[in-house]
Length: 139
Ligand SMILES: [Zn+2]
Ligand SMILES: [Zn+2]
Ligand SMILES: [Zn+2]
Image (cartoon, rainbow, N blue to C red; front, side):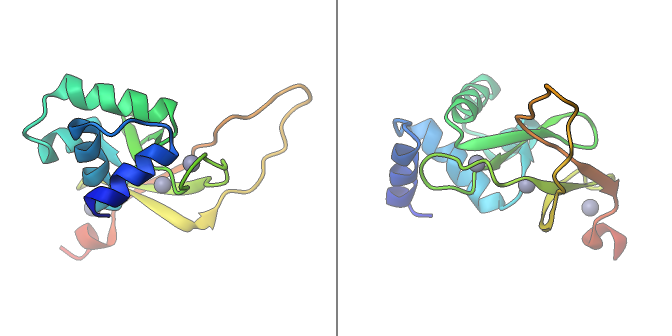
């Protein structure tokens, strides 16, 4: 994504492009996998933690990103796969590596629809497999 594409993508989500917002989106796009606040902090050394957190909170509200708890119970953030409004059809399983502490999207592993009890309404699903990623396993 170049700068124009980022600005256009933010606009499609109803978010005004500020310098910080562009930086956070770019970092998540480059990583190409979910990141924790801590991981973003280490990548965006020019930004302080509270600024990054403010951008992420706004991104969550506008569904520029989605969050889920990784194998440690820490929130991870990943980009919404939709340009414009989110269609909420991106449920997939995540893999958490206990060695490098990174999360991976298993896009091909779609979650089954779960039959909920009468009167219950689901808003999000999260499923995390913990283990060792291929890179760490090969070491
Ligand atoms: Zn989405
Ligand atoms: Zn690993
Ligand atoms: Zn994912």
